[in-house]
Amino acid sequence: MKRQIEAEWLDTLPAQDPGAVGSRRDLQRLNAWMGSPRRLAGLLRSRLEPTAPCHIADLGGGDGRFFLRVARLLPLSASQVTIVDRLNIVSRQTKDGLARLGWKSRAVQTDVFTWVHQQNGRVWDVMAANLFLHHFTEAQLSKLFADASKLSRMFVALEPRRSVLALVFGRCVRLIGCNHVTRHDAPASVRAGFSGNELTRLWPSDRNWALEEHQAGWFGHMFVARWKNGECESQARGQRPRGFDKKALVSVPP
Image 1 (cartoon, rainbow, N blue to C red):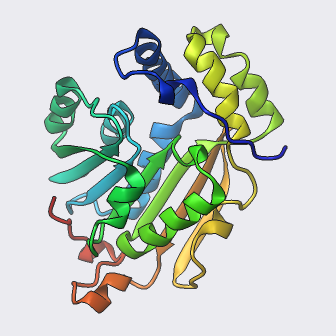
Image 2: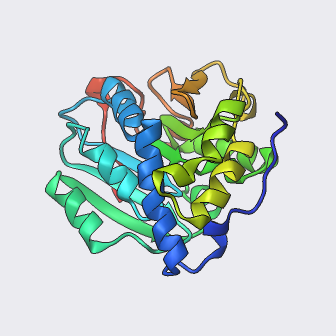
């Protein structure tokens, strides 16, 4: 199945449109079906020191409810998440929920590509993207990856799997109560999704990065890039090395 990017209705509707509100609610259900919060939390638990703070950038994080689910599964202390999205739709309830779990949160309303490009050498413990990368062309993703590889010690993406099985499921989401917006967007996102090592090929070629890419459950696709050598390109700019040695894990200030 050839990759095909098309406009999704949720991206064109006003934030408070009833169809958009319902579709964002549907996405929480679909994320649960795909097991995405559990997969991301499990990966981070295996890589991060539970007693050390970390700072995570959630790219295209929308209303923040996906990361709230992830945070409930993460035994991290005094950590921070920056939710970057073109819309300012992170509710006070979501922020309070993160705060009760010990997370500081910040919502940044801006274009993700611009935000990443303008980070000026900051190094993030993790940059994560959920159901976000499939909106973009290979050229756009190559640019995003080039910037992210200079600014993060781990990059994680959970995306739709481009497969016949996932497409069949996408066409049947009405059976689990999804609204008309989601019924349009679900198969569109599958057609724009990923398979094989398509994201791996777009990440900058550097043997200091450990890359993995594979199917995640029946309908998902996971990509992970992890810096292996305990330091980052920003070290050349005079910053403290920030590798994946758990004992050296240090948070980036907001």
